Image 1 (cartoon, helix red, strand yellow):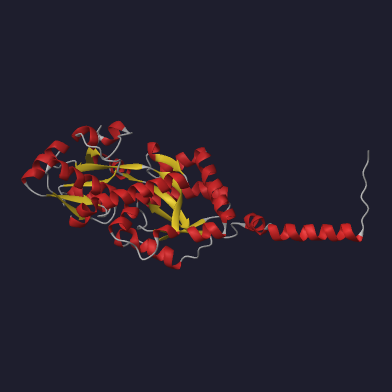
Image 2 (cartoon, rainbow, N blue to C red; image 1 turned 90 degrees about the vertical axis):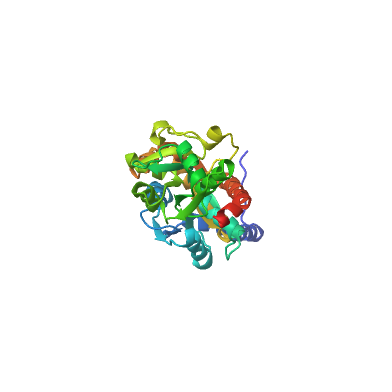
Amino acid sequence: MKTTTSITRRTLLGTGAAASALTLATPSLLRAQSYPDGNIEVYIPTREGGGADRNFRAFSSIWKEKLGTDFEPGFYPGASGRVGYEIYMGKAEPNAYSLIFGNMGPEVLNWAVQEPKFDINDYFYFGRVDTDPCCVFVGAESPLQSIEQIVEEGKKRTLTVGTSRMAHPASIGILALGEETGAKFNLIPLSGGKNTVAGAVTGEVDFSVLTSGSVIAAGDSVKTVLIFGENRVGEALDNAVSINDAYGMNLPEMLSARAFGIHRAAAEEFPDRLDILQSTFDQTFEDPGLMEAYVASGGTPEYLNKGGVDECAQFVKDMLELGARYKPLLTGA
């Protein structure tokens, strides 16, 4: 049976009312269709050319194709990453056109050691790119060529230990080892991964601790002697054993994990924009080109590891708990 509808004043008014209601109800849809209509600023709280920069450029080279816009990085090194976060939280507009790309491990530990000027709940990480276990390494010409030699020597004298920044998972790992064995270690912040590697190679420090991806990139100039977690790459880290296996400890895995973060206010005001960021982030991981770009930038394939809001939140929680637990060791170092 065919049904017809006659257009009367009542039906016309009803249609107009419905259209008006639809228009009022869909501002987020309209905004989503136009987002992004400009480049995305990314605040990186370390210097240009470092591991975070290389990681960011590799990931964003694929992500920008999915998102349909480009990323504009800005580098804000200083105070072990605190400067970049303070600028992002204090000056960047919370509109989803500005993100922060940080190393969750050491940077969250910062907040455990010394609270920032902003509320740490006012931002959150929504996209983790990698997980990189920390390690202990020496220069290839160092007289100390094993973790056993390091511990024994550390019982005789205080050894200097290069670290990229004081509040770092690797710093916690080596101080916990000293606490366990009685070896004495003095942490020396060398400001960044390159300087930390160079400190061990040149003998400026007795040995260094750092994320293992940077150590792998240093090649034969260094030797890895202990992992603060699982050795997923075998010979690339000289088949070094984990601290828990070597010393019967139960230390949580000490990781660097780089991730994109956003203002919580932006996520609450523009949930549609966050949805677009998250969906295109996921699409980036599905693109085979990401692994190619990541490896070409010096990344370790085994460390490329996607994580979302829940995984990042759990990691932040773990880091804050570790920071509280080892704060006396870090501040007393």
